[in-house]
Image (tube, rainbow, N blue to C red; front, side, top):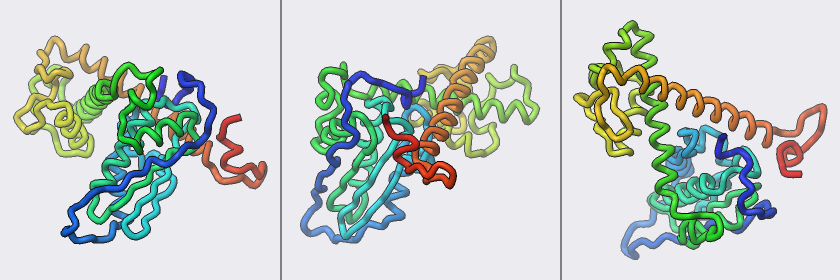
Length: 271
């Protein structure tokens, strides 16, 4: 089940909360360049939905970017009112961190909207207190383990995409176990795989073996078929959830139609 599916664990009915807003601190002698809106969007493009492994900018999660002097405000939205709060917290916190690091940014305000736990998430990120402090009755720890679990899934899905491409080019499945990353033709899928391996601390140099498990152990030829089946199931699940979330957010925030005359909020908002 996708993390954007209903998760009613907090039982909170508020639709929007305070803004996750803090000032950044820079040396007084440092020049004060103005932040560039394009740079803000590029920074947000590095923030990924942890489950879908896609940039929040590509998924339509960034509703608005406003830059006024050194102040940046961002509005975020998600496919459903009940998206899992831990996933939402990760994306709001990551958005805050990457934009805060940009030159010239003096203050960042990130506001998650139309989400049942927006108040807790926005307040938690603004205070820099972490997910466990923001949700003491729900969380049993911080989110590093959650992030790593989904990073491993992203690694498996990326591996399957690369191997599928190699097989389409005519290579025998039995030969996959002997391939190294440098043997694979350049492609966006290969670039993504290398990034996910680097994020997991796995070897990503040209001499590294293509087929390794999530701990980096090279796989024997006898293990390759089972590993690829598991990777394929993982990739299909990620792709299905991504397609579902794209449909949900498009429907939720679609402009009023000529037949119904309904507003965006009426189309996808909570009852």
